[in-house]
Image (cartoon, rainbow, N blue to C red):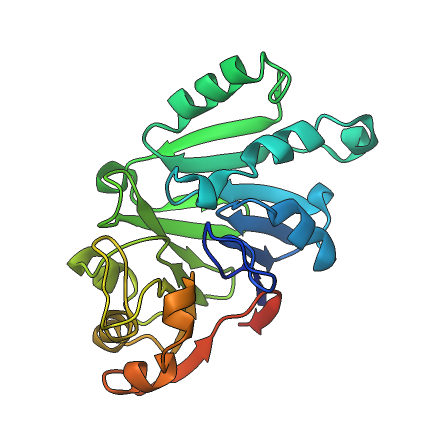
Length: 255
């Protein structure tokens, strides 16, 4: 069984009820995170998810609203209280991850990362990497249409369930292909249909991806305030007939 916890369904703009983007996945006793927006560690604590169970972090891209808690995470794991629990953790992300970590080390004078011999860094190039096996998961990726280096993730659990997470993206064939027959498809839904922004989805474009991919359950996240003022579900229903959920912080989904 796969548990999916929406840790943050907001954006870079501060909202009292929506943290920045992050999703926790619990499968076969292991914990994984998709993105680490600011405040993710606190949201994990609120959800009762211990850092000691974390086996992998998968970043979609390097905009700070999706990765700013990486430094606090690595710094927290240096605390002596975690020494007895340390196992090798995979830190994966698009090409450029190694350079970003080097810049962070320089900016924090080494205090954030230290030696961290138990962190395995993996740069992902979707065109070359195929299927990755990390812990109990099989992971496929695709390039997104957002920042030039962004990727989306397709996670297959040990019992064959499929979760797909877009990260930030505009409509593109790559995400439609990656999301084929997903049990749960989590898509960003940043802006309303009447005010689209390049590099992001609206309710109707997210619904179009879900319908074309045959996803059984569409979950929307990453809402800017102007999108929340519209009839998101109504706009989605014009194109998508499957199960639909508007994400909220700490919502638990099960596969």
